[in-house]
Image 1 (cartoon, one colour):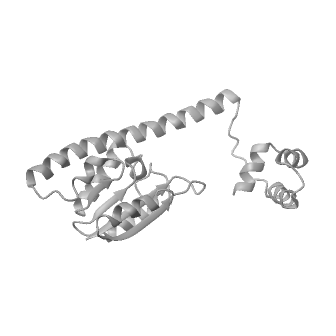
Image 2 (image 1 turned 90 degrees about the vertical axis):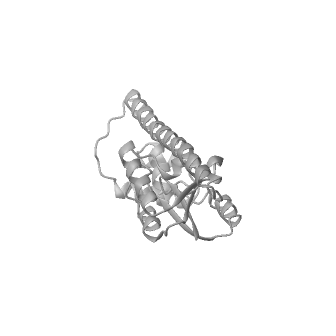
Image 3 (image 1 turned 180 degrees about the horizontal axis):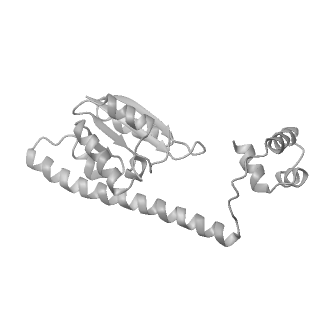
Length: 198
C-alpha cells in the first residue's frame, strides 16, 4: 500500500511544494511508503501531467493524499465527476488533510461505518469542490471587472523583446529603481515587474 501525495499550484510563481512537509509528516503517521506528485498547473483542467501519472501508477487500496479539495479540483461539475470516477476505478481512497472526516476512512474496518463515512465525505468533498470552482470563477470575474473599469483593453500585441532585454540590462546594473527603468525604457512599472519576474 502506498500514500500518493499530490500537491499543485496554478502558476510557476506559486509554490506548489508549500504544503509538502506537512503532508509528508501526515503520511509518515500512516506507516505507508509514499510517492510525491508535484505540479504547477491549473486546477480547472482535468488533464494534468502529474495527476494523470498518479492515476496511472496507483494500485487498488492506495491513498491519494491532498492538502485541501481545491488543490485537487477547481473543475466543472462534469469534469469533477469524471475525476472522482477515475479515482474510484483505481481503488484509491481520497484523504484530505484539512477535512478530518476523511481521516477516519484510513482505518475503518467495519463495512457500515465505511459506507456512512464514504457518503458523508463524498457530500463534503463535492461541496468543497463546488465552492473552489465558484471562488475561482468569482476571482476571474473580479479581475475582468477591474480591468474593464481601469480602461484596460487587451491588444494581442507580442512582447517587445528589445525592450525586455534593455529592462534586464538596466536592472542588472543595480543603480536604478524599477520606476526609473520604466521611464527610461518607456513602459509601465508593471511591465518591469513582469519582465524581471519571468
